Length: 389
Image (cartoon, rainbow, N blue to C red; front, side, top):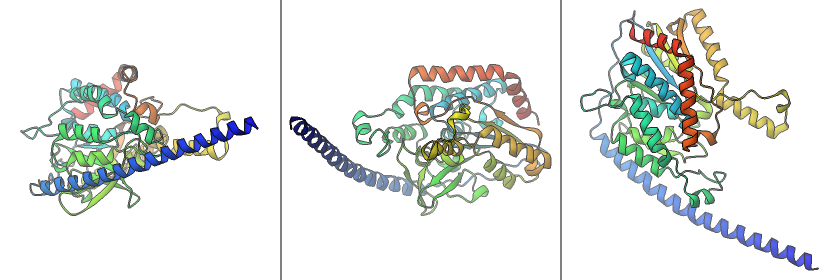
């Protein structure tokens, strides 16, 4: 009888705790919804004001048909993007040129898009404001503040199971403090950013060159807040065009197009159909090879395997497959020996992509240093190809 009484006390206490948690969560969510609503209104007003000083999109860059079009593709990977930035820093130092001068078009998913944008932000003279070394310092200095997880918010989000675990306001505030009201059309090189539009359930490409995809113009900090809103970590963002009345509910597209290599080749061919192409792809997020016994684990285990396939797309195999096809047939102008894939052996997960601890940052920096050392010959070959007309 006593055992039954104790059990009833425990069950009752659990029900009360759960009810309190649900009540607090509902109140907090109502507060958050009101906060988001006000935020969207504010962003819409900012976009409307920016539309009055809307800049024209960059005209097509005049490249002779005999000259190669140089394309950089940057994959997603969160804080692990430090690796690709260190590789870009090496290319800049060896060539004594900025990334925006080395490449004619840059495609970037998630953190890759942020890197592409940062390295093509204009200064007062219309030249690129930052080098890769500046971006590296920014990521190491400010990443902790951006990805800081509030304990109360994390508790109410169920550690990310109920709602996004990171409050995006710190991130957006930081973006605007650096980017200001710079517009997509004002970047110093052609930049294309993919985003996942949730209401239309499709990938959207946002280009600094209107002649590529006939895209509207945006305030960059607003656009990046959507294209880098990692599902489960950040909430999706409503982004407003400043050149028409369009708006988009965007999330990070990394589950679908983390490696935008094929889109880059197709779009480059639309811009420059007759030019040869040189493409450099820096990808992040390779998985460990599993043992045979790790497979065929039923629905739950299989779901994890499918997510791995979707998330990584077996980037080595996918990249090599398309390069082989394109080189063999000389399609899209990609000639033999014109595609470079920098292999980054990082075991990607949401956890380590948001891990801004000093230990993890030192670890990924060491990975970058080892890649640069082991692939130095290929990197120097890339510099030679990019700087030779």
